[in-house]
Amino acid sequence: MTLHSFLVLVVTGAFLTFFFDPDMSRTTYDGSYAPLRGVEVSEAYDSTLNISLDVRGGLLMRQIHHWAALIFTAAICCQILRMFFTGAFRRARGLDWLFWVGLLPLAMAAGVSGTVLPDDMLSGGSVSLLQGVTQSIPVIGTGVAFLLFGDDIPGDDIIPRMYWAHILVIPAVIAVLFPMRRLLSARFGGTRFRGSRPAGLSRGLRSAALLLYTCGVLALLGTFAQINPIWLYGPYEPGAITAGAVPDWYMGFLDGAVRIMPGWEISIAGHPLTLAVLVPAVIVPGAFFTALAAYPWVERRLTGDRRVHHVPDRPRDHAFRTGLGAAGITFYGLLWAAASNDQIADTFHLSLFAVTEFFRVAVFVGPALAFAITRWMCLALVARERQEFEHGYETGRIMMSPDGAYSEIHAPVRDHGDTPRPELEEGRDRLIKR
Image 1 (cartoon, rainbow, N blue to C red):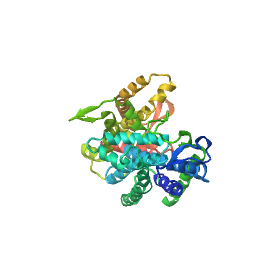
Image 2 (spheres, helix red, strand yellow; image 1 turned 45 degrees about the vertical axis):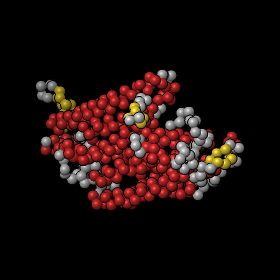
Image 3 (cartoon, rainbow, N blue to C red; image 1 turned 90 degrees about the vertical axis):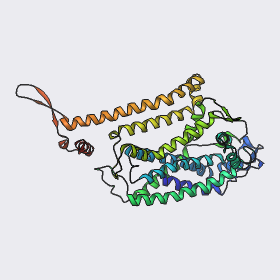
């Protein structure tokens, strides 16, 4: 699905490049959308409105392109979660793990660079966030901001620079990575649970079928699910913001982290250091992706397991790793929800300060609870299986003894009816080895 979404992005993006003009020079809008006629806008915003409302099929292509970007990132996240919880990152698939972890920030960068291009109020919010993040970096922040924005902020250079990064640089890097990953997959093969059977169709037919499904779903979403209606947001005006505006879902955690971070700022040798932006927008994401990339080698060092693994694990059999993954999901989810702290406060008639304080505490307490509960559930499931192996499986059949006593018949796991349970067989073998 990741590859197929990327292909849709390339095709729809190629269509949009014929009509989009990445120019920040000012013009007067004179298109078919009456409420904005006579308003001074940028050429980028004017061309995006033209694509949406005047080019035949333009709005459909824009919306399919946007939905494909969201599903592209979601598919990467699903693959990373599957590999993490099943231990598919172990030898000899460490490079495969790095491929997916590296692809995620590339997908996020592609999404952000594309969001900036229309020069509407929503994209202006992304520009402001990007400006604040780059300027908060010590020592090099000012230079990075100059490379992105030029002399002025936002200036007239950010959209042309983001345009070429969006349509050439980032897609080229991703296009090179996919064949490299294909070579890794062909060399080491894919993982498969013990007892599972390969699908009857060939790999090529299954891939073609999934491509058609992916294209069909994206076409339906682009037709019936409106996304990013820039004509409702209006052109970007520095200093203004659209109420209730939030970034795409994959950047929500960054927005939430910035919202709940206290407004701390310190001074070092007369130079201000804005921790309120630096910590949530630079340090936390950097530490997260670094830990994610290094996790296979950290686990290998701690467990001493340097064997080659071709069979994935069941999450319950590795309670610590599964609990750690649940804690990471909880941490991300709470930051994602914190990006809507104002909407939560308004909808449920709560104090915005109370909601913010709740999230400040929850991002520390929630992951710890998720880890403890998930680990306990995994250990309980394994203990229940151990009991089944030792005493047999409850059949639900009642037997009366000669003296009139009743007892339930327990059948051995191997003889459990006509329904095979390979996962129990596998777990029993592991317990015997232990």
